[in-house]
Image 1 (cartoon, rainbow, N blue to C red):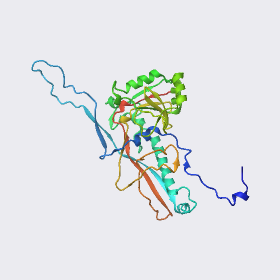
Image 2: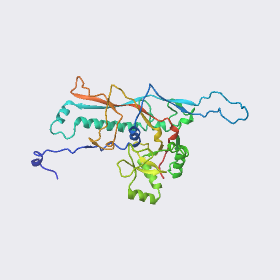
Image 3: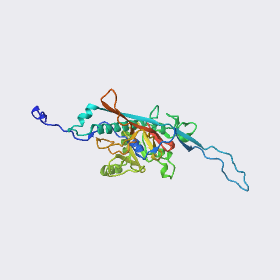
Image 4: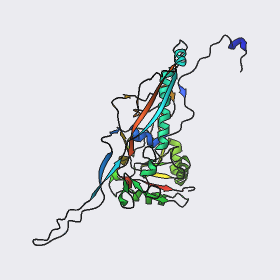
Length: 348
């Protein structure tokens, strides 16, 4: 009921912690990539040699033989530059002072820092599906492509070196188990567990389409027992039960998750063994952990955020404090051929 001024003028309202996040959506594969123990950036550019051809200096012989001793070039370097993302946090001084009175329910500074980190992670999650153009981190749009949209990767041409091309297949509108099987085979090495997808990521619509392909018995099992889930730090290729995380279906034992950041009408077959976040640290910046108690949302269960910050700065002509949260480095895949995607999926 709506109370009158007889009550409201003498009754103190009380806020209930924590703040509920009602805007940010799921961000599965980006969180998992960043949640892995980050690899540290080294050098002006990040370079790694990859083998792109087999040596031809071997073969059968008899007697003394006539061996081929020519030098054969079999490797090239993939090279990536570090990039950065910032998120500003602004605390007006008078608001901070008011918040520090006895009426405080949640600390303003801590809540704003937590909210800013969540916002930054959400924005990076969107970038993670992009093509790395401009100042953006390298994303799946660049990693998982055959040259159709991004003709070079890591400074090398996919036309010249097809070995750095992913498998990209137009579904023709329909999603079938046969098309999924063909994609799985295309991006895997037969019999090698490490050389096959560990996660299939898609949008909610395609996730639901895949579920319709399952037999009624399997669907009934999911409905009765609940979906397996994947978390930020569960092992690649593994789904869990009885824990918090993102619901998943499975295909050949590989979790399939719906990611709200994912490209529409697209199903990504990803090998997380070859998806890495290389973190660049600046000794002049401070390391900051990602708090989880102030904001109740999809990022609450997170661990290390890979963010650093500048510390609080006081502007000369303003009463308040300002800082920036910074993520430096890049997303990298040194084995693009172990990823693939089906595009243009509209029905099952």
